[in-house]
Length: 217
View 1: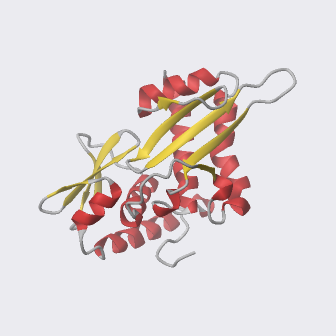
View 2: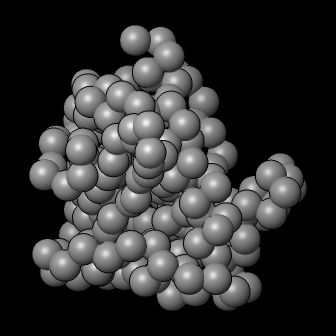
């Protein structure tokens, strides 16, 4: 793994997150043309030195002078893993157009070997909490994350995690003979916006946010 993109999932250790965050802040400081990078990321540049970026149906600001990330119109502290994802997405974005070709996590660089961990972190929660009621997934995702229904499986929903990163959740209902199952799909250009590990963290974040929203509905 690149030394400026240290893993931030190992053991859930806060020190690892902090180091990843500092490295991401350093990467932000090296961007020469912020307005061009905003175009690539689908973000908005607010002079003199502020970027607005959409993440999971909320707007966040990045103050370029100190890399401070805050949720617009809210004083709630942004979780550190969300800060890292936002910075990784913004600094890595290449502006590549959507291909219209959908792929699974296994098709990402290194995704095949990491898939068991990805499945445990992101797919298992979807099956556990929504597998016997797929319609609840689309109901919660459309209401809380501005998702829109798709035509895959027994229920599916596309969520624009970032402006250039759609994430499609698909569920198949279980019955007496077959257990419920799920999958997560991405546009084939996703590696031009997030690393394979970032994608895993993003999908885990989405899955558990939907579970939380379902419980509080």
